Amino acid sequence: MTDARHQRSLSPVSQPASGEGRPDVVDLRASDADRDRTAAVLGSAMATGRLTRTEYAERLDAAYAATTLGDLVPLTRDLPGEEAGDVSVRAADRAEVAARFSKVIRSGRWLAGRHTRLTARFGALIVNLSEAVLPGREITLNIDAFCGKLIIIVPVDAQVIDEGGALFAKRAVYGSNSGESADGPVIRLVGDARFAKVAVFRGKYDPVRAHQFAT
Image 1: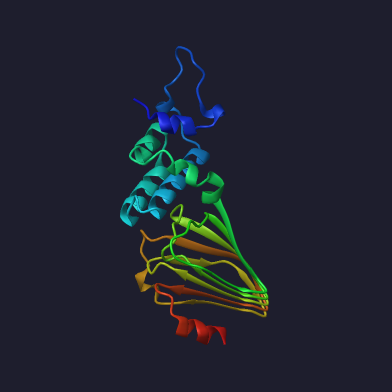
Image 2 (image 1 turned 135 degrees about the vertical axis):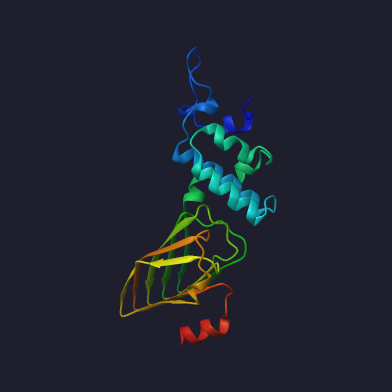
């Protein structure tokens, strides 16, 4: 049997028309939107403590490897229906954290987007991803730093790829990369830093080192 709750989460265009010879819902090919929707539900479940980090990582991998809707159904079958209403596909796909003429800290358990924009303009922005819910094995951080400071803390096993640019700016990744793991998340940095400082720290946030970097 198919999961009624999951069927209700499908958009009307995803629902098959009734008639003989048509495939069951579970046999239909899954779209990127379907995978993102499942990832959002899993992220919400982890944020509320219904899933452990290990369970979340395993189900997330299965979600993005899913070929059909039937592959996605078991991943959320044991989660309450209201979980689907806590987050949206857009929240799982895109997010933004900004500090303008101020100091902003985003830490603890929060839902990052697969594409997250980080803006630091005439301010200081600290973003801690070590306990954040990451909706996928790879997330992209789009940096917009101008006359400000941006500090990013990533999981110790994260692979950091910095593809961004700098103009009269400092960009650095701190912490040994010996902890990188093939199973760890990939954090890709794009965007520019102008007259700014951007630092990435692996593992625990060290305010002493951060202060040394900022000065």
